[in-house]
Length: 491
Ligand code: GLN
Image (cartoon, rainbow, N blue to C red):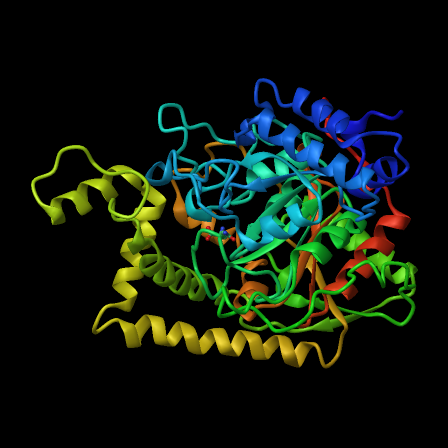
């Protein structure tokens, strides 16, 4: 049997269904690979819990259940609350917290029979682009490393998810994307990830960062695997998430095999300007050429407010974060300061000790842009431009079916390179923020290698609810290429 670690979701599912492998055997093999916590990808594992879930999957299988994801391992970004594992959101303020309920997305994947290997590292409250903002374990917080070059960052904020999938520690992971946190780490680690339309996947039980942007999605090594996972993750959750879309989940695998003939691929000029590194541009240009060879036509389009997406996002996201994070006050859950004089002092000390620098920075920016006298000048203006950015996409989609371009302006940078420079991190989000602000689905697929052999990801953006089309394009590209099959040394 091929090395189980390198098999994807669909391949493992086939082995399990044919009873050539049991879920327990598979879980044991995967757990064995987690010793020493490669790449610091995991924040918690518990082999007893995992094996009990695997046993339950085997029992369902023995009783005749043929659900396709039954017994297949997954690991969850530590921003989803889980009953079986602690949830920290990468923050000291939640260290040791255990949720009394599962996030809807986690529960749906569990209902589908997936076996959880544990919780994956992420930037604190998903704020970051490098997974260097992780603050737990408080005693020795450790940044996640990129499996392609351990001196580099894996991307963020779903850096643990991307590193774990790239290093074949798990065939799949959940991630969340507020401004790029599925797409950018997927690109930096050479894997495939999709953020669905805002509202497709429930936000219930996802520790909130910026509620009008946060969206869950799958990360795996192929579009085919992402389609399987996404089908199980999505669907209405109207009683629990007021922004959940009342749209049934779909079989996102249904269009994978459609030929690309006649597909119009929009190429935004603004995504190919001076800031795009040559070593990223090369593979992207070649991938676009590849789509053309498969029957697509390339259509130049304009997204004229692309650069404004940075200031707009970095006003709106912190504004929402400042409000969302007010619940961490030392009273309801998580860390509480030991010595304090009165209630206000307890709040202050708890939050001072519990939050890291980037989180504090965003709470301050957010409170500022929402405050009397600045609200109109910043927050309201940002909301207006956000609408214009969404309108720009609708104009563009009059001429094309999907939009393609880079995910990030460079390949993954060196650990520490931008850790003291928040602005440098923010600027690197330029190509992922527009689709986030518009609430559109977006994905990243591996299309080659740049500087120092680091993976390059191409972004595909679709119109609302067009995930099946994105996955179709991605799958057709992956049928014609091998980039998604390349594994880092040691995986
Ligand atoms: N890098 C962006 C930020 O720091 C996006 C993070 C995310 O999508 N969660 O906010």
